Length: 156
Image (cartoon, rainbow, N blue to C red; front, top):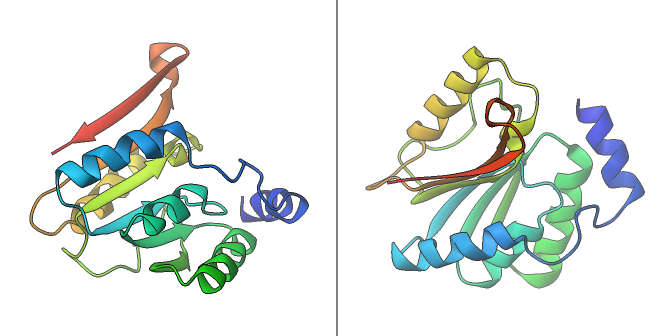
């Protein structure tokens, strides 16, 4: 899977665009409301949402499967001096994160990838391990079982 995303990100410096997603902009309002200071982003890609959050004062640990995407994000982080800690991860393996450290976990469309139900349970158990005082999960995914409906999950 990494090879596919590495090729996509090698061919396009901003595959999903440079502007933050509408979802990230909506989530940012929740982040402000709940005083989020540290966010774990899963499946950050080239970082368009990561950069938006960091530019607005949120420390972001941004993880992705693609080495190319993480390298691109790291270069942008350095150029703009943003509070971003990019890293490589495999969602099917334990996340290399500090337990109970983050105020929120953000993911835009990562869970659309082909994960089994067992793998999804594992991913959500890793997400729960990341929280500090309260939990705020903001995850957007396409749910095939509901037809072509986009589902946004907000949990607190």
